Length: 284
Ligand SMILES: NC(=O)c1ccc[n+]([C@@H]2O[C@H](COP(=O)([O-])OP(=O)(O)OC[C@H]3O[C@@H](n4cnc5c(N)ncnc54)[C@H](OP(=O)(O)O)[C@@H]3O)[C@@H](O)[C@H]2O)c1
Image (cartoon, rainbow, N blue to C red; front, top):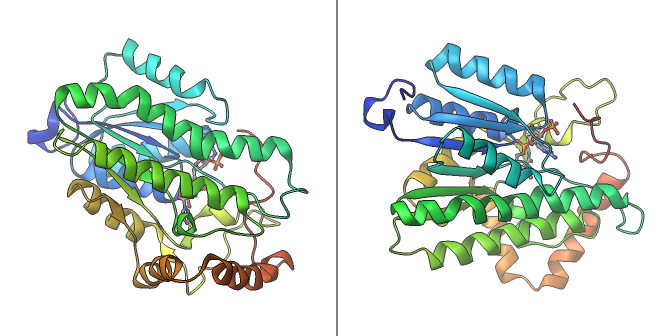
């Protein structure tokens, strides 16, 4: 099977990327396609997947398969796994990127949305890793790239479910990565800070992208650093100097002090100055 342009990887590398329809996931797909990988694009956003897939074919001649799955359903990872088994596709690189946030006092946010968040941000990466990792270990090669967040080093008063979901993914990735030493398989967890993607403009009144804020990194830059770290087998990648400092401070500062700072910062968000995607787009 011919995958893109790079002959050396041509018959070999299949990559599965969740949340491939936009933002960091779509940018990661471009890097894999550039290097000749075949890509299984997974997202709940059908039109976004079509756009990503057409872009990869046009720009790189990449071979892709688009799978529309809603990862908030706990059975989705097994369905994806079975789907690929039927197609005789062995996944060499798994990218757990899909994710979203909720914002507000925990006792006021919607129960179903918090459940969906746990399924998308925690259960799906854990289950997909469970399903695809054994054959990577058997083959003695493979990569897993988990997209967590710098918030995984912190706790938040108003995004407690989101921050703790990323703390899980960070800790889970580090644990599994360590257990895999010497196996030929590596797990990388990337912890971006604020990044300019549709992640936090889902609830823009007219749906139009707001201008990029100074403190936001470009998705392409975040993806490039994550990709390089993953190829080198690094365990943790924190894109951007200020995010590295933040992660360091989170380790050094007492948790109570960090929480006090975040409470102050996020109260502004509650007043409407900054918004996370607390109103989700309807299912596609
Ligand atoms: N942007 C940031 O500031 C930032 C910072 C740190 C970490 N991250 C992390 O980076 C990852 C990618 O986010 P992004 O910034 O690139 O945001 P994004 O552009 O919204 O991309 C996330 C993708 O995941 C998809 N997705 C969400 N829920 C899903 C579900 N239930 N089933 C299948 N697909 C689903 C989204 O589809 P829909 O469009 O249909 O929702 C979207 O295509 C996330 O894990 C996020 O937590 C982002």
